[in-house]
Length: 263
Image (cartoon, rainbow, N blue to C red; front, side, top):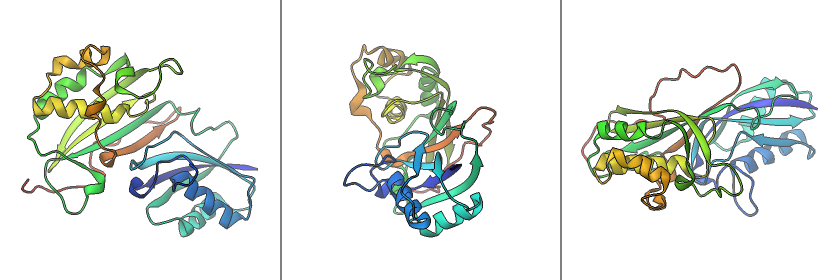
């Protein structure tokens, strides 16, 4: 049985996230359906690097596929893409050793969030439209408080009794591109809803509703659980998954651009 590393992009709007669920359409479920169709086999396994929630997108999700096949990696990629729906695309496929594991072997991940400062008729599923003016300098000041090793239990729905909620963030970068404010978060791993709540906090800082100095207090739980600040899934993209030896040098730019325009 061969193991293939698959790098995928997808628009998550029509899916209930990555992971297979009963009576719900998911990205992993679509991939498994197509593998059955093209191979005629049921004795295969698809493992993703991690879950993405309902409505969340990916520019570089990674999965591994264990499949008995004579197809080359490129022929497999071609046949998968020929059968997959148009909003899921296999960017690359390569044969790897059995030691490679999409989830357990990952050493870092990068997420991109797109905030739009204007109403858009075309890319609403890929942005969060914020009507209020945003002070990007204030947002950068607030972002600095998230960098490093912290306990993010108050920015997550994960249970700290069941898993560690300590996460090391390598960087939280913010850039402007036309009508967009782009937030990139890079770290070792991420908790459930953590990135969306982090972005929600930064938007509140940019609006002036929170001070950048309040970020450490949010992390400590002094100001309560910021669940009400959770940003919508539409603007979130899993940008990249990193493995030992990988370099991350992707410029910070939009996944789906929004030009300048009136609010």
